[in-house]
Image (tube, rainbow, N blue to C red):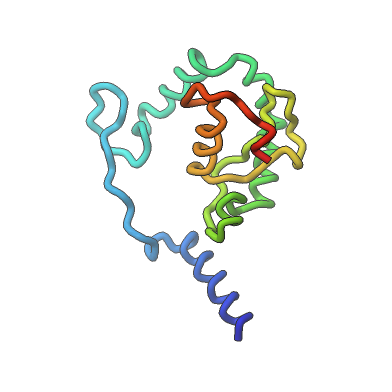
Length: 150
């Protein structure tokens, strides 16, 4: 009986991802963050301005060395790792089934980390933002402590 219940729970989780009409309602759309754009969007920018913002970020804010570290090889590794780990590893440890949206380097490449599988973690956007917020390498000026992240 317990095996049947586990299978039923798994099918329910899979059904939520495959049948969007059975999911919870989405939050209301918000205006695009691009100055003067009235379009409504689910994300930060509308489709027209998302690419422009990404180009601006790559040109002016992102570390130029990052382009060297994240090439085609990383894309292949990331896709393979995400396929092997379809759920966020942090959420899964807490008993939640959240789809993987990013692959996180436990020890950043800028600090001597590698693309090795032992240095990767599949995460959702919320967990990825929380990890980087706690480390302090994106949104705050905290002291970076990569050793405590494992």
